[in-house]
Amino acid sequence: MGPQVAEFEAAFARFCGTARAVGVASGTAALHLGLLALGVGPGDDVLTVPHTFAATAEAIVHAGARPRLVDVDDATGGMDPAALAGALGGAARAAAIVPVHLYGLPADMGAILRLAADAGLPVLEDAAQAHGAAAALGAGTPPRPAGSLGALGAFSFYPAKNLGALGDAGAVVTDDPALADRVARLRDHGRAAKHDHAEVGYGERLDTLQAAVLLVRLARLEGANAARSRLAGRYDRLLAGAGDLRLPARPAGRRPAWHLYVVRTARRDALAAHLRARGIATGVHYPVPLHLQPAFAHLGYARGDFPVAEAWAARCLSLPLYPELTPARQDRVAAAVHDFFGAGG
Image (cartoon, rainbow, N blue to C red; front, top):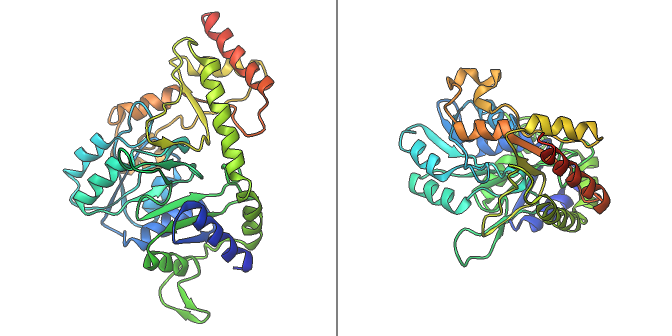
């Protein structure tokens, strides 16, 4: 809680276009404390997606609530508004909606926010991968930064993120002063003042060292994101026509942060092995959807309940993407991909 924490909070709030940012110890803490600030608790359902990192659902469980999953959109992997609409019809205990800006691409927030407003539910954005992303909420409206679209936005500054600390760190952003004050209180053992514990809280403060590092890296984020965007566009051109490879979608009105460049193919594992044999690392984000994870077996879902998420999990492959990636190395990745499909896999 040194001075750099407050300085970073002010700078990150400006970056996100929100009135407040509250630094916390991790992205998971940002989701957890954000849900608590919204009043989510035991007996509540929170609607989210199965194709995401486990922390999205973990935070809901930590709040005492039950993750109620809805399938994702085939084109983007983000929350499918049609699936959300169907789930809201039978969600009598729903308390909040948590869409995930997967791989740095904002979910269809215009449609999601309209459904949320009709249902009277707050939206907490899981923006852990979306630092600097933006989305328009309707035709002809200007894009707004990820995190500023719902009641709250939760960010992770895990070292691998576009904006990364030296270890775990996170933040909650919002325009609502009451929500910001509650998150700030909950992160610091429920304290309203040094010896005044207004409620039971948590030890989830943002470390001053991490805040100092984040201040330096925040100043470089827009340039780094621009480099990611150029490289993503170059991948689009280099990989066009490669076998059954599906390239990332680019929905109108949504500006991705390009945290990851994720392609899909029915021969994902074979392609990954082919690239690995040529010294090219890849990743899979994420190979097992949440409803098939042992940790969430108590939710009662089964294979086949979310077919689109399961298809994404079986086919997605993250190719190398980082601001310092050189054209020569990117050319080598693309050539190896074309070689794989040209040789029949």
